[in-house]
Image 1 (cartoon, rainbow, N blue to C red):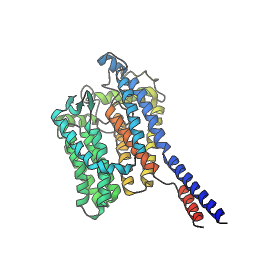
Image 2 (cartoon, rainbow, N blue to C red; image 1 turned 90 degrees about the vertical axis):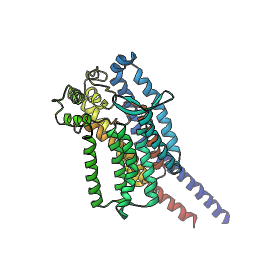
Image 3 (tube, one colour; image 1 turned 60 degrees about the horizontal axis):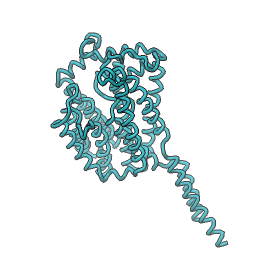
Length: 399
């Protein structure tokens, strides 16, 4: 009888180990993984389709931008896999250092950065262009997740949320000084979402939203260039030869696409009509070539990713994981919403790339690395079924 009892216990221990291994395997969120890989594949195809006229005209090589995208995409995928395998709690040790390095990088851009199209946003390191503002979007997520977990929720008093938002404001001001209001605004949007999620009453929320609106308006009207862009949004056809030029051609592209599009590779607006169509306005080329159906499919994939990300945040095993997941998916969601709104003329033109699809190595690598962290958080969540199975096994072991 004793040997029987030992065998039962050994069997239960083995069964418990199998359940744990099974849980780790099943916990990798396939909705996130598959949707991101689909978006990266679509991005590579559309970057080539949207860029080859521009590449031929400027670089005498139709594969110029495609080659760069095919270089950065594998690096980003490797970064995603590595981040997926590393316990997300490890990054707490490097968060303060990362915050400091990001500040140094943003200041270095102002001092030594490369000016392109009137904006100083890039550092050239060893022949590789690096955009520190892309790093800032995610470092602030890690920093605030660590701070809020360590020092508690924001509903204790007014000072606490202001301190958290002030930490984001340091990045935002430096990015704004690079003539990059859009990314500066995204940093503050994401910081506000994280502070709100951690616990804020209605009075504080309304007051901070109002203050954010005032600061945003001040940013828009702080320069003639931004003010003219805002005015052109109200009536792009009136400014079709100046600040409204890009939006007008974006609307031409969307209108030409119709329901099913003119066919992959057949866009007319990318033929040197729309400036750099492979960047922030790539969604307009997608609309022209793939039509409304193609746009809906891509927006549906983004919706799957965002909903799955929110689900991971809700099921994360600790507060740090919840805040980290909420912040990461907020960075992606805010950019998607702003980019599509700009391209369709629903808000003033601003330079926000479409995650995973717009051309840009720095953006792609950091977005994929962040998704890797999100996947790691998902690996450490427990399903209701797993919890029941563990309880059953534990009860049998105690018999």
